[in-house]
Amino acid sequence: MRISDLMLTNNYTDNINSIKSRISNLSEQISTGNKINNPSDSPTDVVRLLDLKKRLNQNDTYSKSIANGKDFMEETVTVLENINDLVTNVLVKLTEVNDSTKDSTLSSYANEIDSALNLILSLANTEYNGKYIFGGTDFSDLPFGYNVSNTGIIVKPADISGKQVINISFQQEEQINLPGSEVFGNVDPSTGNDIFNLLISIRNKLNSGIKPDQNDIDKLKNIQSNFLDQISKAGVVINNLDNTSEMLTNQNVKLQELISNVNDVDLAKAIMEMQNQDYILQMSYKLSAMILPKSLIDFL
Image (cartoon, rainbow, N blue to C red):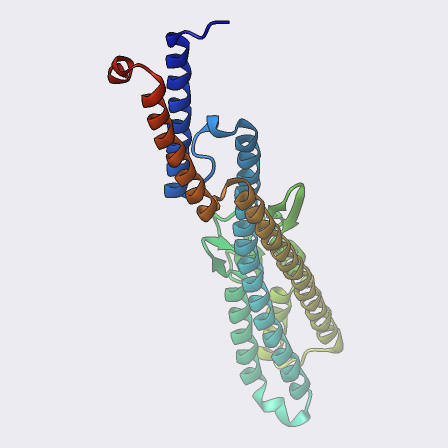
């Protein structure tokens, strides 16, 4: 088959354009540090890269949720520990008041109980990042307050039984609050079995010259036992959040390595390859000048 000048010209043009394209791609890779700068560079790798980055972004979202949830739970634990300290102090006072030498100072103990009551009430209404920590999922009202006649503590209109749940990994959720209904039980002035109304009852007895009986002390100890259980429950959640956070961090390291393997440029290799392509381009120019007609070279 006869090879025409036109065929030589077309082959030359195709080769030159191909080399120039490779040099341009290598130059872009060197300047950006990325193998893939356009979808056409490697469709298969583009799909792989998008999937890896999607998983990385999802993990980042989970990590942020975990960090916020952990902060919320740690604040909850701090508040419960403070409440528990106050209850412990009240139990000490109730032991002291049974001493017959304290009969003349019952009103003083009543004031101490009242002070502890108001501190516990304030702690129960703690707000963190715009949320009442014992308010369930309704953050519009304080969870607890005095009734209309100021004779007892009641749950305000907010639903304090709601559970706040976050996604911490794919198909894994974690509850990051302790509902007020579980921490403080059934708050009702008529029964007086909750921490608030029990302390009101004890305070009123002391103001009336009546010492709290063993039943009152046992109720208070049971309430404290529940507080300790709730603190332990929160600790389990915090540990789980920590473990999941560590797992996500390890996953992110692996994902970053995979992304690097797919997309990062070996600069030394790319520079050498670009130099080789430039050498081939220069040689192609020289060879074409020798083989193709001068007029054709001028035209090109």
